[in-house]
Each structure stands twice: as C-alpha cells, then as structure tokens.
Image (cartoon, rainbow, N blue to C red; front, side, top):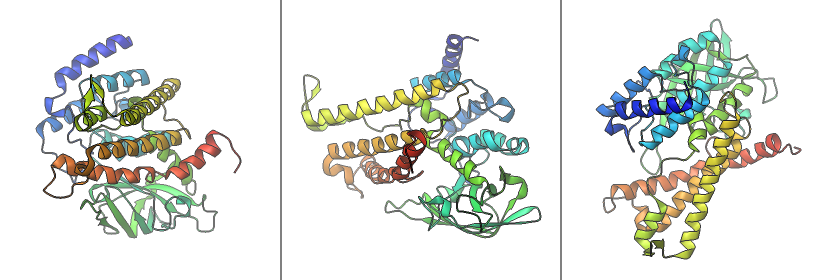
Length: 391
C-alpha cells in the first residue's frame, strides 16, 4: 500500500471511528486496573483502537501492536492531530517499559507483558530514585537477593509517580554490594499488589498526590522477570530513560505538550491589538521567540525520526530534546501566567477553574527540568556522549 493510500484510509477510519468525546482535551486511559473510566466516548475510542492495534501502533502485531512502519506511524499521528483525537492509551507501559522489553526482554517476557499493555489491562510505575539517590542514581541501595525462584527486595524508592494506581513496577536494584556503583545493579519487574510493598502518597501544595514513597519489605520479584543479565541492569535502565525522554510519539509530534491557551490570543485579550497585531512590542517578541524555538525543536525531532531507518528511539541525543523541551515548557507557563497577571495565581473559589489549573501547571512546570534526570545531568550526557568532550 502506498503512503498516500494509507493516509486516505486512515483519515476515513478516524473520521468514522473517533467519537466526538475523544477529540480535544479529556481523559486518556493509562490501563490501570485501579482506575475506572466512566466517559463512554473515551471507553469506545479505547476499544476501537485496541481492536485496530493502534494503542501501540508501531509495535509488532505479535505483541498486540499495529505493526506500522515509521512513515505510517507519522501519518497516523498527523491525522489524529488533524481532528484533535486524543491518544486512546498513554502510560508508562506504552512509552517506557514496553519499548524497553522489545529491545531487552526475552520472548517469554514479551509475550507475557506486552499484549496486556497494548490491551490497557495493566499500568506500570518506575522504581528508580531513592531518598539518597536522585541525580546520582547509580548510588542506589535497594537490595535484591536471589532465593530460589525469586528475588527478595528490601529498601525504599521515592517520587514513584502513579505507584498508588500501578499494577506492576520496573525497578533498579543492587544485586552485588561489592561491585562499583554502576555495576552490580539489576533491572527487574515486580507486581505491586503483594504484602511486601507499601505505597505512601506525597501530598503537594496543590493538594494532589501524584508522587509516592514506596517501601519494600521482603517484596518478591520472579527470577523470570529479571530483564537482561544479573548485575548488568544499568545498561537496560539507561535505555529506558532514553525512551522516557523522547518516546516515539513525542518525537513524531515534536514533543509539544497540548497547550491549553494560545499565547498570541491571550496576549491580545489582555494587552490589546493594533490592526490585528499584538500592541505590546516586547511581549510580541517574547512570544515570537518561543514559537520559533518550539518549531525548531519540532523540526529537529522530526528529522531525527526520518533518519532512523527502523524507527527506534535515538540514543544520547534524547538528552538534547529533554533539556530543550522542558525549558520551553517552563517558558510557555511563565509567559502565560505573566500575561494573566494576578489572575494566574488563584487557589480558591474566587478564581475560575481554568485559572486555578493554570496556577497548578505553572508550579508543576518548575519540576520539568528536574524529573526524568535533571537538565544539569542531561548537559553532562550531551557533553560526553554527543559532543565527545573529555570527562
């Protein structure tokens, strides 16, 4: 089938099968068995995309995917964006552990875990950071000892996003205490619903609790769920972070997060316009610079995808995308709140719901340059792995 024919067929299928309630902002399934989706259009969209294999369009059909080539996947994303169709499924499973298992998992692991991810039957969380091991992740101390057919895990993880709703965790643990810190680490999978796992939410100033502390007291992970070789998990863990920083969909779509407001339109409403142009010249320049930087990032990411013959996530270059995209996210929220003035920082009933949400997004965006590996760490990776500078 030619790409033009695929586009025509895809456009027709989306128009016919994407319900009105699945277009524009709204709920997206993450597959968790602990979250009930009540919106009928969201559920219908999920079922239709699952049947099509398009919850994970570029995964092999054998594991529940759509088997699309990279050019076909690009077309699908473009056509979904054209009608503002939301992803039917977005999760740590689709963006992080799934692609990692495709690279490093055994055939048995792929067949056991990937179809469940594709069918929205499970959600995962990430067990990386510890109270004393954040940016220096390789210093982690959570221990795993092999006893018979299971690893017995003891220790603590922190900032485990979504752990309270997760069914499984992918985790980095220390399996050799005597080895140098980057060695002796293993990557494994473990079920969250067991007596040895305790999750304690961390409440933020906003009142929400997306992050958690997770404690392991003789928690069990099957020997069959060791990914890669024992004591060689650092390689697997680093690759997963590259998927996290630049998942395929993010690269194809330019990594642009859905913007809730158009900066030019907001600026015109607050600052006025002259003959269709924003009246304030300095603000106009700031918005133009932001829009140009966003477009430059988008085009660069698209070029990287087109240069990848197999559609695989790039390597260390993903650190560039992480730095630029998170700083652009902060620039956007900074501009948006400044344009709204005092209305941007509402926390009570005297402010509208969109204004309170804008306040939450502004403060949450401050963390964007820290999570997924701080931007300082990313710049070190760029210097060493991309530019080849000496240590």
